[in-house]
Image 1 (cartoon, rainbow, N blue to C red):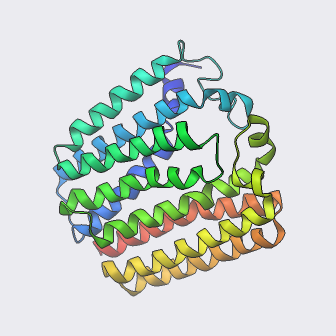
Image 2 (tube, rainbow, N blue to C red):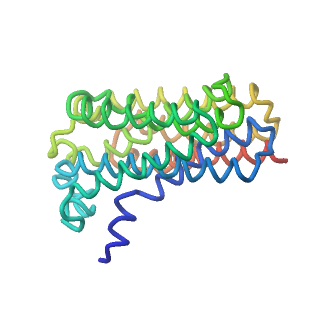
Length: 285
């Protein structure tokens, strides 16, 4: 496998793109459907570089965990495709620094939010809590919500209720996304010594926590539409998507089987994208 492919997988470009999109939509919504091309390009480049860099550093510190899990053992660092491994840190820090410099061209608040996301992801989530507590994903959620908050700040120069709601939406979505997958791969996490909630609490209790997060996510998505004035079409789409999400996570909470966990994971994966696309369409149209 070529070096380009190895570095592409190191940066998790699909995940990076979703996080950038989760901030680009708030930016457009805050700008009432219109954002300057220069500002949009700066946002995508700045936040994209910062998120990709953060991911590379995260992958470096998690390389032993990844090597111990079947699901992640083919990642580039466990397989020795990037040698020496500290190249990942050098690349990650360089990309993050580039992202901060570009973000400063928008405003200092955007750069500050992006920097806070890096700090939570690397120091609080990856280094301080991931190997110690099942609630680490909550701190990871703060990091994952940073692009959404940065997007709103890029358009308005402030955080604002709309920006906080977009960030809270992503923050609540992340635990349901991770805990459903962690239930399906509970043996993998246990083998690697990672105290994910399904490993510590068991599938049934953790599924109840997942359903609570899903209910909160759905409520926030609907309330966001009212605050941002996204209209009835947005509310209708989100209401339907939320009903499907609650059905999937509710079934998971009742059955707590690997099959229901995987089904809930797939639905949750689609849910955030649907909400963001609905918000984007409502804002533009």
